[in-house]
Image (cartoon, rainbow, N blue to C red; front, side):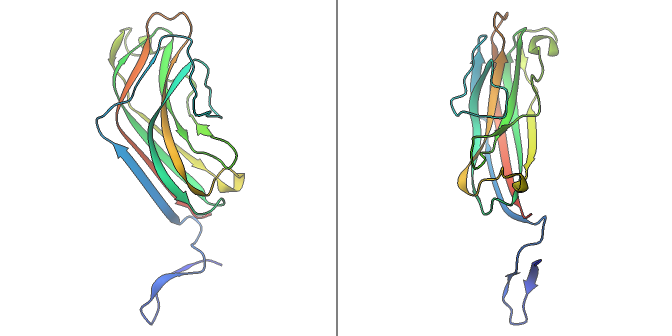
Length: 190
């Protein structure tokens, strides 16, 4: 049954039936101004304290950048998530890179989504063979389909994680300082 949205003759408004497919049934947002998260990787170090799966974790130091509390109504909904991270001062390694992932827990695991393997690798030569400066901001978006059993219902947090990647025996530390981040989540009727 498709939904009918409007006002009835007796002036009661609301939805009769179910929302039509493609309708946004929930939206959550969080943003952070100039306070920064700083991460450093001196080489060959890995951290994954929140047990993120679905992304490469070798030689990456992860830090939680920003989260938003959601209350998803159905496991059959789709989630559309957009995250943006401003990047401030950095130092670059000849074997380093930096990036971000979107953490969208599924019903069974702490899943994360990444669109790049080693963005800006090697960071030192990507930015003109200098050892420090200012990085390029990052944006990711992903649609998680409820029909694939990847959407978790209920209240939980969806997060942005940033990372510094650095192989063993680098010349220099790969570091990253963030600023002005934003995350928006839409729950979409299937």
